[in-house]
Length: 607
Image 1: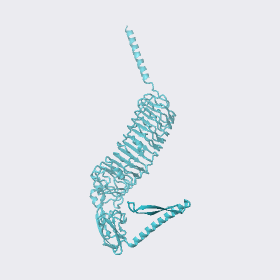
Image 2: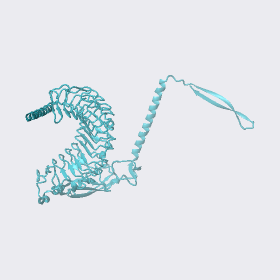
Image 3: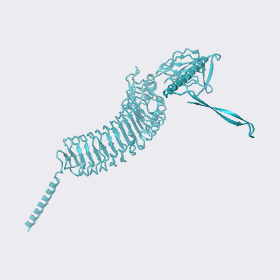
Image 4: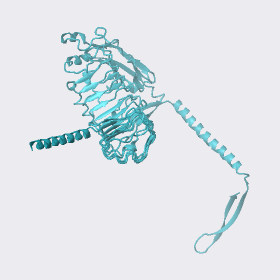
């Protein structure tokens, strides 16, 4: 009996072992995997990359999450090509030779989040190609040969957040091409043949937060280029070598926090288009041929913290350039032509955290002393400024100096006008006068001239400042008389020199004077007297003017008569006959029926 029980126990153990072995064998049965492909059961990934496939393989595991078909020779995607892969998250068909995608090719991929079709040969995407991709968030169709984006191409991608359309042959984007992309946040348009901003198409993307244009044929940004993009926070325009100007209202309606316009052809900071961007924090204008940052023109950018202008050919950053920017923390102007940067350019230099001045021909003098005093608190990005133009300090960077030697090294020499001989000129009306003003100092002083009303004179007009610092008064008038002041200034101080001008007017007996109202706008800048501007004309001038006027009048009349003569000749023969008729009539001398008399009337007709 005990032996029977033992046999039964052994049979039970054998059955259990066979059952466990069967389970183990079943667990080791491999998942289906297409030939030439590699399948990862743990990652639920199918990798068919670089397999010279000409079509999408069959027999794919239906629970796959990642499907890699890159670097093959697939040419066409047919209707419902992937209908069994209902759990697929990522599909990559980049670097094939795709030329056609049939309508509903991706139907069934209701779980797909990422679709890449980059670097193929697609010329057009038919409407309806993306039907069924209700959860797609990223689409990459860059690097194809697409010429036109048709209306409603992406209307089935309501969940799409990011799309790359760059490096195509795009010449036109239809007005409703982006209709339906209610969730789109990021759009890349790079290296296309577009020559204008597709404003009408972009108005469909009211939820867009980031827009990138690159290597387009733009020559200007017209007004209202980005209207209805009120949620846009980042705008990047790069590598547009023909982009020279931004219209005054080109950025109107935007509330940007980041703006990049780099590797373009802007010759000046676009102050007017920028002034309403009060939320702007980051501004990059690098690699544009910008030479000046003028003073007091960026103050509307109240929240600006970073300005990058690398490799722009900057010659000068004027005093007050960043006035009003109380949050300004970073300035990167490396690789320019700056010789100095004065502390007066900043609203508050104490707020500055990072300063890049490297690769500039810096003159190490008193104007840069503030940088040395703050060098322990400033981050130079690993590239401290280096003295270039100073022979004594050439090649030394700002971290090589001790605090004790600074006052004797970083020095300036005050401006000094060299020739201080009195200049008093007396001339008759109509002559041209030249005043000289030469100055010396370290750094080289700048020279301005003030008129007798102490108003600065410009380089244009009848009274103007020449490039060599001299003052020219052309066709001097009596009202130009007075004392002019030459002022030479640099960082160490100013010097001035007054000069006098006396202009004698023509005698009133031989000249007739006429007073013209001041609504004539003359660029000479000469002051008006009692709201009028006086100009003298002699009798000879008036006679010549009157004679020319009469000659012009008689010439016009003569031409008219000649024209009428030839015109009448062209109308045929004219009959020069006249008929004269005499018609007698009666007239009463009074109303009582008394005496009456006959009167006559002549009528003449010319035929």
